Image 1 (cartoon, helix red, strand yellow):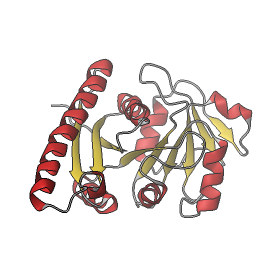
Image 2 (cartoon, rainbow, N blue to C red; image 1 turned 30 degrees about the vertical axis):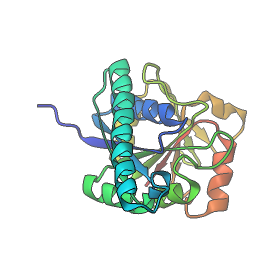
Image 3 (tube, rainbow, N blue to C red; image 1 turned 90 degrees about the vertical axis):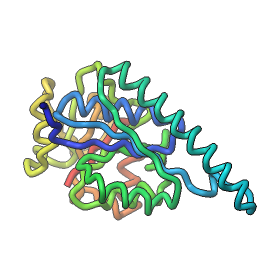
Length: 229
C-alpha cells in the first residue's frame, strides 16, 4: 500500500475562493506524496437565529445535512476532475477553537488558506488567518484567487530574499525537486514576479506576526505564497 508522506489541509469558509484553494492543494499534492483534506467551520451565529431550544435543534440538524451535502458535492467534483482523492470534514462552533482542535488531532504539515483579491489574508477572516500563520512546525500556503495554481500545468517557483530555499523543510525540498523550470530569486518585488506561480517566503524574512510587514508583502504579489519554517 502506498501511504502518503505529507498531509495537506484546506481551511475554507465555503465562499468564492474555495475553488482556488482546492486547486492549489491538488497541485501541490500531485507534485509530492501528499493527501488532501478539506475542513470547514461554521460559527453558531451563522446557524441559529432563535432562542427557542427546539427550533434551534431543528435548525442545527437541517444545517448539518445541508453543509454535509454541499461539501461532499464540492469535494467530489474536484476529486473527479483532477483524479485526486480528497477527504473532508466540518464542525459547528468557535472557528479558532475548532481549527486548533482539528490541527492538533490531524497534525497536518501543510495548511492551505486564502487571500483576499486585492489585499491581505482573508478567507477565514484576518484574525483567524493570522492565528493559523503562527502555527509552529507548519508550512502555510496562502493561495491567490486571481492567479491560482492549476493542477494540470507546470509550476514555476520563486524565492523571496533567499539565495536558495531552506533545506530543513522536507516538503519544500521534495517539491523543488519536481520543478523543471529554474528557481527565481526576488530581493525586491516588481512586475517580474508574474513569471512565477508560487513564491517561497521564509518566516524569518517576513514575520507573519508583524501585520504591517506581512500585509505589505501580500499586497505586492498576485501569486500564491508558501510561508515556510
